[in-house]
Image 1: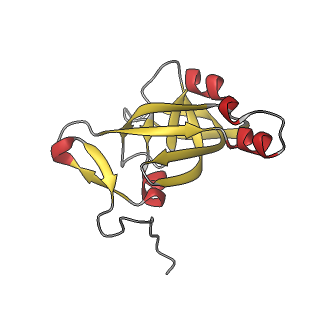
Image 2: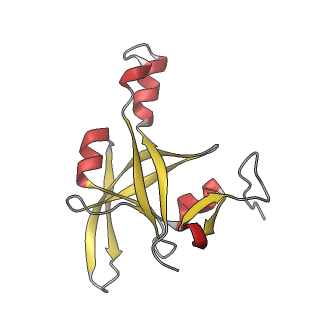
Length: 139
């Protein structure tokens, strides 16, 4: 199947509050479009330290995480983070991975965005069964 990647936009929602309060202009909102590796095995969004610093996400704690090689490490948790993809958005927390490591889009934000994998194009897309708005289960 290969590596599936997705272009997503990350936004600092604290800046949106500052815009509403007229403390900053809309063009000062910290946001960035990144290419994330789609990883159904990861639960959370994972961003690297560089992105965390550039977008100024708040520290909310620490969490232990088991890596692909089986090692367990403690990572910083930041948030909230707005994730935009096409006509979808979600707000979640993110684990901060070392250095300039590739970012990972995990299963929880993907489910909330209601996206599907498109292996032939090695990307994701909005769920064709719900093209206008994301749908979630409440049962």
